[in-house]
Image (cartoon, rainbow, N blue to C red; front, top):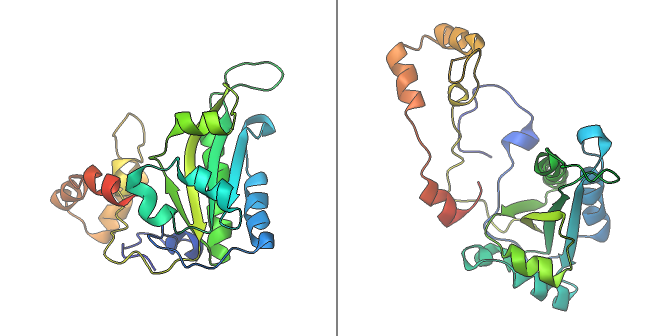
Length: 222
């Protein structure tokens, strides 16, 4: 379960999700893997354009798995090499038919991947998404079309252990939820603070907290 404190009650699948830093050696059943991809398939997208694609490599296909693993930067290898499956998340950057720029393509891929992640969480499967991958090599190896962007890679498997010692740090709502002009606090949040008895000094202290980005680069997503 998460180490952070929730300000509002949310679904346990969201509250309990984390990115594993180690995976067990057992495989993911075919039916489970297909169900995760089916969850991605049913995601929302602009005009129902569904721009996402996934390239899949499982540990059972040793050659394909090794090929995809070779595109993972060293900083991510510790957990990626333990995964039962690796997926490359891609998105088409133009609309089919018109060729017009797809402004929300990466957003829509993110929605699809979120569906996949929460279906995985519901089935007891962990997902660790990775930023540090060799996109140029992936494009060459998998003959990815020029109008398709490689965005991320996902390592899937059964968590070997919880992310012990890793903070699930989250920014306070006040730092990114605004009402009116940019950085103007939403009145609803001000009202919540008043009810909770927070002083102006307390709020300022909360907003002054900043995430250590070196920690994110060193330890990945949490």
